[in-house]
Image 1 (cartoon, rainbow, N blue to C red):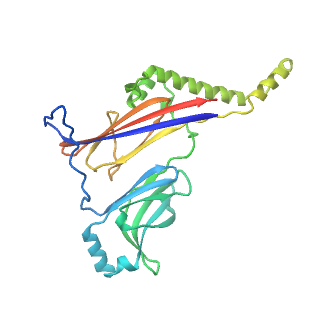
Image 2 (spheres, one colour):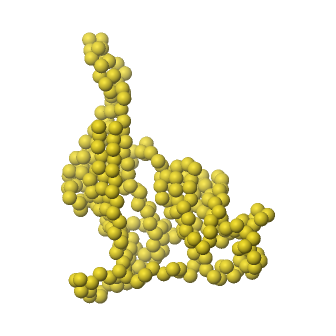
Image 3 (tube, rainbow, N blue to C red):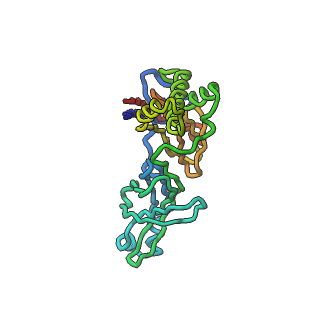
Length: 296
């Protein structure tokens, strides 16, 4: 039986203007985030294998245009909904689900009835006669699977020097445990998995050791393997530059991003920094993750 404990600490620092001198005892929390950005849009983010998070903004002009086109009472007579649309690998819609929401809430959690699907969302109004009036369409996301992946990515099958670089890039080299120790731990875990796989693959033994082999197989007939990984996601302005553990990452066109990281035992420090397009403002978020795996 395996008990796995994860502890996450999230520390956010406000924006700061470059080139300004600050006293050592002064903490700049930055300007408060604006309540709106003057653009009608909605953004969809994956939270876990079965949940998504959506937030939106609707400008006053959009409200006026909708009332002008569909009637002054359209927001009273029609139901506000988020239409969840699942798509296939070719991005063709497979099905849609309507979730009633309150437009004043400006954000909502959406439940997916299966893991690993690709979705986008449409914020809109559903009239009594069944018509759907689109207000804004979100970006496309793919939910993670709720299990250990059966795909072995070749980038993890690498020599020790390259593995150290991977660990250092993910923040592993910046915590109390050194990269070499983490590399040894990963190697030991993979070796254990390989041994378990070989135990299951035993198909024949010699007649002289039949009794001993049967006893070993009985001892090893029940087994358990478990592991976990980390999904990091977020959003910022479309023109911003974002780094994770001092490594630049590519943003989606709407300013969102997501990464899948290995999660070995020990402490993992993940600094995330965004710099505005004009290079004048910076915001940082520091996430600390601790994993402890116990085998009994």
